[in-house]
Length: 467
Image 1 (tube, rainbow, N blue to C red):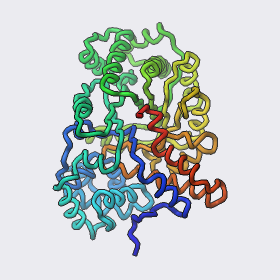
Image 2 (image 1 turned 90 degrees about the horizontal axis):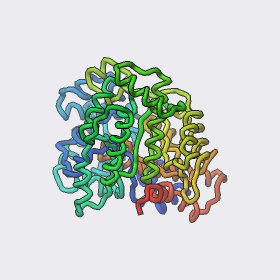
Image 3 (image 1 turned 60 degrees about the vertical axis):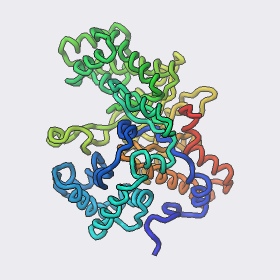
C-alpha cells in the first residue's frame, strides 16, 4: 500500500509532477516572514521532546484541540509533555480537511522519516522514535533550518529589541543562512491602547530621546529604524485590524498626540488621522532606505476575554475581520506615489473576500525596472490551506500577473514549518499542471518551469535584493 505522503503527493497529473520534481523541488527557501526566535537560532536550541518542539506555542493546533472539547490542561496547562502529545495524537485523525493533517505528516516524514499516520494507536511509537532522534546530531534549531535548504529568514521584531542575537548570527561564519530582523512598530500606531505611553517611555529610554511631543516620537522612531538598518533589517511589518486612511496635516496630528498625552481617548476619526500620518512617514522612511513594507490587514485579536485574561495573546483566540478596504488602501498608496515616495509593499488580507480588491490595487502602482513592486501577499493564516492558496493565486492570475508573485512564507514559530514551502510548491505545480491538462496553458515546460522557479524562489531573491 502506498504511504500517505509519497513522491507525487498533491500532484494530480503528469504535468504537475514534471513541474514539481524537475523545477521546484530542489530550490532553496526564502522565508521572508516568520516568527522564529533569533535567540533560539543564535544558541542553536536543542529540544527536550516532540511536545517541546512541536506543540508549544502552536495556536493552530490548540484551536482544533479545543474544538474537540479537550481540556486546557492538555493544551497549555500542567499536563505532562507526553499527555499533551497524546491529546494531539488523538486529535490528528479528526483534522482531515484541515492543512494541519497534511503538515503533520509532512513534518514527520521529512524530518523524522516516519511514514505512519499519527493517531492514538501510533502515538507511543512516534513519541519514542522522534524523541530518540532529537537526542542525536542534526536535530537542533540550526540543523532543521539547514536541512530544509533555507537561504534567508525574516524574523519579526519589536522596535525596542536590541537585536543582540541577530548580530551574533551575522558574525557567525559557521552558519551561512541570512537571518534578517523585520521592524514591527504596531505599538507605536495603536494610540488608544492603555499601554501606549508606557511603550513610548521605553522607546525614549532606548533612543535617549525624551518623547514629549509628536515630533520627538518621529525622531525616536527614525532612530530605531536606522538602528535596525545597521543590524541588517530591510523589511518592516504592520499588523492592522483594518486599513486606515484619513487626510491629516502636521498641526492636526500634533494636536491629536497632545490630546492623548493629556489623558483623553481620541475619536475613531482622530485615530485614523494619526495612523495615516504615521504610516506615511514610515513609508517615506522605508523608501529612503530601500526597505520592503509589509501590511497584514484583517485580524480581530483576543476575541475571548475570559481566555485572554487566563492565557494572554497569541493563544488561538483571534478571528477574521470585515471592513472597507479598497478606497483607504489605494489612497495610502497614492499619497506616497504622488511624492515618488512609495516603497515596495506586500499587502496581505486575512479575509479572502478582499482578494480581488488587493489583486486589483497592486496593479495600480508600479515602477520601471521593478517586477511586481506592490505584491498581493501569500494566503495568510486562516487561508494557508490548499483551497486558500489556490484561490489567492487564481485571483491574482485572473486580474494580475501570477508570474511576478514572490511566493510563500511560513508565518510560523516552529522550526518544522518549512514543509509549508513544499506544500505550497506542490499546490502551485498542480495548479499550473491542471491548466495544461485542461488545455488552458501550453505544455511548454521551459517557460512554465521558469515561471514556477520564479514564484518559488527567484522573484523573492530579486525583490529583497538578496543577490
